[in-house]
Every structure is written in C-alpha cells, then in structure tokens.
Image 1: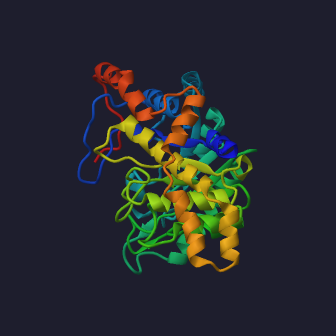
Image 2: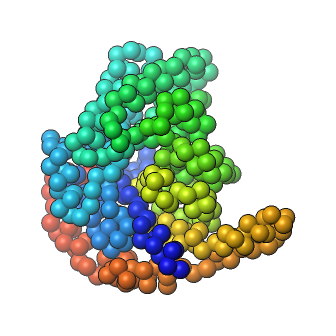
Image 3: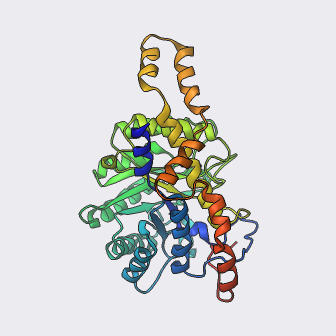
Length: 385
C-alpha cells in the first residue's frame, strides 16, 4: 500500500486553459457566471483545481486563445499561483485560410502561414519554460478527388520536419490524431498508426498523444496505449469521454471501466514512471457543467482509475495468464476494478494536508461566489459558436 500511495502522490494531471472558458457545441455556447476573461484568470481557476486535488500542477495553453504580450510574465503569474505552464497547443483550424487545410493545404502561402504559427508556438515554449508542443490538425478532404492524398502526406511531413528541427534541448512535440471531423472523406492524421509513422521517421522528440474521444466505436484504446508504450512513442493523453464521437465530456463519464483498462496498461508499461515522460492531460470542455468543479471531478476520476489499476495483483494475474486460467485472470482484473478506492484517496489527501473530499471543500470555499461577483464586464473567454 505504501508503494501505491507513493505512485499516486507522484501522479500529475494537466488541466486545459480552455476548459475554464465558455464552451459548448456547434449549436450553442452557454455563458456562465465567473468565467475568466483572460489567461491570467484562467490560471487562477486552474490553481483552485490543484489546491484541492494536489495533483494538477500544470495548465496547458492554447494559442491564440491564450495569447498575451508577455509570456514570461504569464509564467511568473502561474508560479505565484502555485502552478506552471504545461503543453502549448497550436491552433491551425480557426482561420478562413485553413478551409482546405493548414500544413497540407494546396497553397504554399497557407502552408507557410500555418508552419510559421507552429514555430511561434515553439517560441512561446521557450518563453514560458514549457517542454511540450501539442499538434492537432483538422486537415483533410470531404470529397473523393478533392486533393492528392499522398501529396498531402508529403506536405505534412515537410512541415513537421521543420518544426522538429526548431525544437530545443529537452523539448518535444506530441502529434494527435482524429478519426474524422471536420474532414469527413479522408483526414490527414486519422489514426495512431499515421501519427506513429510520422513520429518514428522524425526521431525521439516526436511522440504520439492519445485523445480518448478520437476513435471509431469499439476501438481497443488500451491496445494502442500498450503498443505505443512498448515502442517508447506514447507521449501523453488527452483525457475526455465519449458516447458517440468526439463528445469532449468529462473523463470517465461514459465508460469508467475503459478508463481503468487504459490506466492498467499505463501501469503495466511503466507509464507512471517519471522517466517515461507520459503527460496526463485533460481535453474536455462542454456546455453544461460548472467549470472548476468539472475539472476537479475529472482529475478525481483519473486518480480513481489509476488507484484501481495499481491495485491489480500483477503476480496473481501473471500466474493465471501463464496457466491459461481465463476466468481466474479476469477475476484478478475485476477484483481491482470493483474495489472502492475512495477511502484510500481520502486518506492520501489528508496525509498531504488536503481536504478528503475536494468537491465539497471547493464548494464551501466561496471561490465561485467571489469570481461571480468580481468578473463582471469585459469579454468572457470562450471559443464561440
């Protein structure tokens, strides 16, 4: 149990700045009270999540949503709040020029513009002390014959190579994939295999990020995790939850058993070890849950799944597997999943000087009432719809 607690104390889960702003669906974004109006206020809210969970010490930025004049000052502000700047996320999907793609666009001018933005994000990494650039491309085509599929891969590879060469010491980029949307006929980075192939060709500073909402129904995500860990190419996760497509719901909401299975493969493959470098990030922003409590609950969901994964009796599991004991092996697995780990985590928090129930502690803190009263006027953060 001591080893399990030590592993849980060392776990870090990164929250996304955009989760604290207004968000929603393509139909409607519902504004909420107290929503941040700038990146500084987003960091203040993220610091609340870390204050009550103890395991959310970094915040991912999204450029240009989080653009400021002085990134070094933003990083200083984060440190004063007790958090740090995590991954820098690029945005090459919200500009009219990118209607036919960004780095894979047929236009050399548009490709140059997109790649320059990615290089700008590396500059921001330098200024904030971030070591991770996260790349997701909405690029693709909607109709057969619309563009040359192979040529688009060539353009993608060319841009990725330029960005890779710009990375400094101790920096890396994570390449994200997505099955479909907004491209429906052919997406340029549709799956883990495509992302993996590009990363292998580039070298050790390029790794794959697994977004749990970006797969076809029935995809065995834990297999992908196990494979990428085995190859040293799993750079991180974008945790969220889905019922149908890329729903971006709170992680563990749709299938907590899947989250447990994923975390077991992480534990089994050494993904919790610091030297593995796996970043555990949230990427979720829907339109009905309150922002800060939604992030607190999500962090707790990942923590609970991790605790259950750590409880799997791996010696007993290996013995059953080697003997071909199908039911015995499954029973070992299910015993861990069916264990209520909430008392363990409450005890762990109390030992760390935290309230045993982060949700209740935050609700009683008065922070929401404070920001709802103070954050009146100005433009609330959000991506609009």
